Length: 386
Image (cartoon, rainbow, N blue to C red; front, side, top):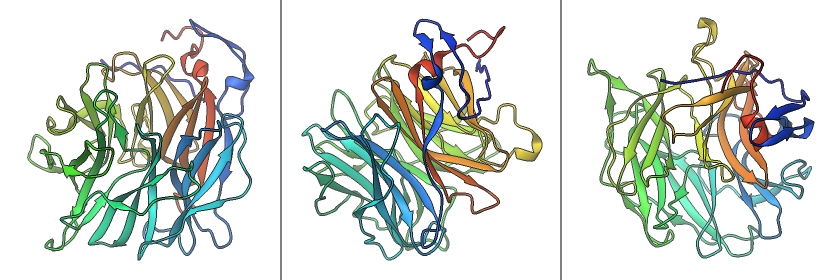
């Protein structure tokens, strides 16, 4: 049974609370907005990105900076901000990391430190509704310059969506997994926004890629198509992989692989109740538990049922079977919280996410929220057991 203990937390509120087994939480442990990048003149939208820790100790956050519109197909390039204090403060101006090379834009960044020490930059290049595909570039100088791009999907050319902070590298095998949703091919009469879920795999550090054996369309018990989009993957302790997708079925749907992402079980509804909005799941290095960030709709009121609010985090001690200690970071009813990237540095968690206002363009603002691992485990209030 899914277990949630809720605690609504206004960002910036300070408290001293005992954290069982993890010491005393202080005001510095509480969540706060370390950086907000709202839209401005000539910059109508700032959107999803990802983090990487550089060899000199700094954190780099690479995000999508739009220039001529706020739509998903408007012009955009990749911009960088840097932090020298574990994400507490950030540089005040952008550095252009990669100029737009698409007919439409480039966006949806994933960053990984590869086994050879280089940094891998994954992103989407959008040319049209018939050509949106993920690319890979490498940097051997800590993000100062990038190699020529490698196409992860050479054929068939189509419209594939891969979210930010989605590419994973398996611990034992080193395999790279890029989960994507296919929505259009040249032969389609119109785009299939319900999505076909699949993974692309690389066993040579990203030099070459192949599609996994499983492709998934999902239907409910009545045979009606379930919209499955924006897949993510997390590695479990027993070696399996868990995939999670946003859906119009009332929850994140999940699937499992026992062979490193080549084949998958059918996608099924989970206990992560949510609207059609992406979740993020990663493992907390210091505790070994999973951290989930999503729009928790387990107790949502009818007037907010289809909206991407609140913004909530929870932990799982049993690799996603149950989730507990759910805490709401932001709950503005007009807020639009999604596309979360996670990073862990020292004893802190960094969340890079959209934090816009649905009355003002939904996805206009990107925010970095910082909090301590201690805070995730603190008791949620008197009389509430974790």
